[in-house]
Length: 216
Picture (tube, rainbow, N blue to C red):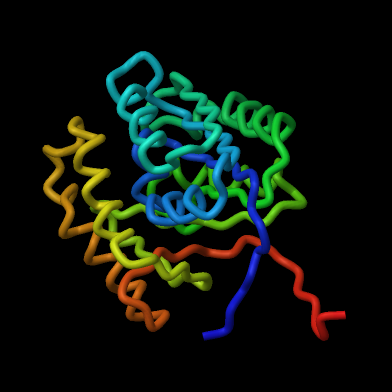
């Protein structure tokens, strides 16, 4: 596989429409980044769930997925399923996050996501984080919108299993969904592992990047 090295990462920005999107999309990657960079600055914005049990679930989960990190999480109270009708508030919230941090990596949903909330956030992320490496994560769910990713992150041994365990542990409000279980999460990470010659992996869609040849 052709390798892409970001260099040292000290700060990341996370964009999610709903509580649990981030953990589903890149929980294994968060575990890896936090382990590789003690004190990692994590600046996260979730657009829905404020004032509910889901917000508390999200805070506890992010602490577990980013142990030892400097976490700043904002959860807003926008209505689940209706984010396109609140375009201005979403745009302003993403812009405020962009102005408040200096991440080397930005994670957001990908543009091909079938859920309208995810898709809107994917479209707005690069309009505010214009000079950043924006990686689009995939969210396992009922819709058959599984993408064809271009970037794969092989997960260290045990990370996929730990991700699955933490998801089930920290989001009890979602356990009634017939797809929300460890087997589902491990199935997707195993598939992505097959596609990059690893045991397990998480995969991303690349928004835009430049490449330098020659190593000068």
